Structure formats: structure tokens, C-alpha cells
Length: 328
Image (tube, rainbow, N blue to C red; front, side, top):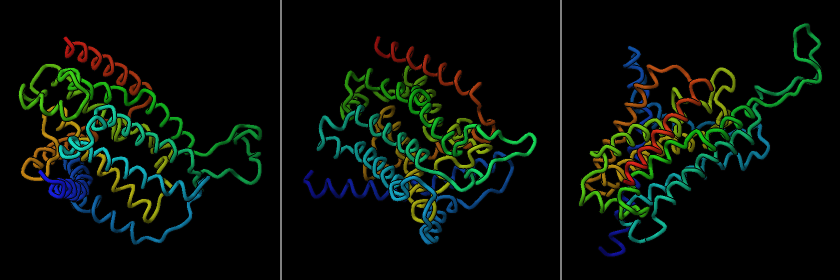
């Protein structure tokens, strides 16, 4: 395949990804509403219409430590997620060689997680501004008590998610690498073309369950909406995003859902996002993952530390055992 054709395949796959991903938030909200016996929004509203709406909103200066950097973080996140998607395309795997490896995917996913920590650290919403005078009311806050912005709570939670919350997800990613005896993405795909999809093995089945639980944590989806505890930090790090910055955040989050499905399709099914008829497999996987996440969100309460920590520890232990089984 010549260079021009390869570039065309890469561009075509990326265009399809951007079109499909903007429908996934609508599928998620519609599925969740149906489970809860509600009508729900139109399929195009949460993704496509919301993005267009935010692009035409008036841009205001956010109440942040560094407003320009704060508004640039969704753009960086979108770029990082787009690079992860490019790594999964076979033409890019061949062209980039050793860089198209599982280590690169994990590293870029960690960068995507760190962006939320920066968002929380830079944001200082008007809703959490301290009073210009001490509160002397009976039962009120003490004068010398430590005060902080609500986003700092989200920043602390984000740090916990980065350090150990997403650990099961990353361990599950290495199960296919161990079975294929290579961290190179192309080698993992070729191995499954010969030996069959890893999904249809015992480590693959258990790894799929761990992957799904970890992916919910990565997406900050219920019941693991730990980053955005709506009762205390409103919307956490994204509260101050508006206009184009909000639109880009919606796009990056939607693309992350689709890219996560492509990661699973590549590692556990041996079907990377190739421009053409094979692209149907990652698309179907993304729809299944989105609907499954919506069903879990509809039936599950919001986890607190009491439920969150045991879930992360238990799934991490299970994934370690699966890794050992896959190695044997």
C-alpha cells in the first residue's frame, strides 16, 4: 500500500471515529432513560447538538488561576485521545513501529487522566468563593477554619484516581500482551489472527469484565462518578468550562468512549479500527460498551469511599491473578 493510500485510510478512519463518537453520548442517555422508564433526550442532543450549541455560546473568562491554560486543557485532552486512536490504526502501527506499543497507549491514557487533575487545580468557581467577612453566626464556620475552593476536593479525588483508581483497567490491558508475548500492538493483532480472539479464552473473559469495570472508572461514569461528586463539587473540574472550551470537552469525552472501545476491539478481538468494512466491529463494540455503561449507571447508586476502595482492590487482585494465568 503506497503512502498516499495509507494516509487516506488514516484520515478516513479518523473522520468515521469523530462522526460515530458524537452519537455515543445520546445512546448512553437514551439507554439510561429507557431503563429508568423515561423518554430521554433525542439521540443527537447530548453529543451533536450540545457540541454545536456550546460552539455558539458566548465565551466568558473563567474564574481560574490561569484562564488561558485552563481553557487549553480540553484541547490537549482531545489531541491526546486522537493520538491514541491513531496508534490503533494498522497503517500507523506499521509506520510508527516500536512506538505503536501498549506502553505508548497506557502512557497517553495516563496523560489524559492527569488533565483532569490540572482542570481541578486551576479552576476556582464563583460558587465556592469565600465570604468577604468572617461568619459570626451561631453554628457557622469558625473564623480561623481552613477554607478552600470546592474544586480542590475534586483535585484530591482525581489524584486518587490517577494513583490507584484506574489500576484494574491498566492491568487488564496487559493480558493480551502477555498471551501474545509482545507489547507491540501489531504483534497482538497478528497473534489473534492465528490463535483466535483472546476474548474466547478464560483470561480474556475475566479480563473483559475487569476492563469494563476499569473503563467505567476511566470515564468517571456511575457508580464510579468519583471525580464529580454532584452533591458537593457540582461538576468538579469542568464547572467553569463554557462556550468553545465546553464543546471541545464534550468532543474529547465522546471520543474517549469510542477510543476505549477501539482499544478493547484491538487487544481482545484482534480487530483494530481499519477504514472499511472492518470498522463495523469497533463501532459495534463502542455501542455495546456505551449501552452496558448506561444500564449499570441506571441501576447503581453513586459509590462512596466505602464501596469504591473495595471495588478497586478486588478487581485489581482479580486482574493480577488473570495476568498470572495468562502467563502460564
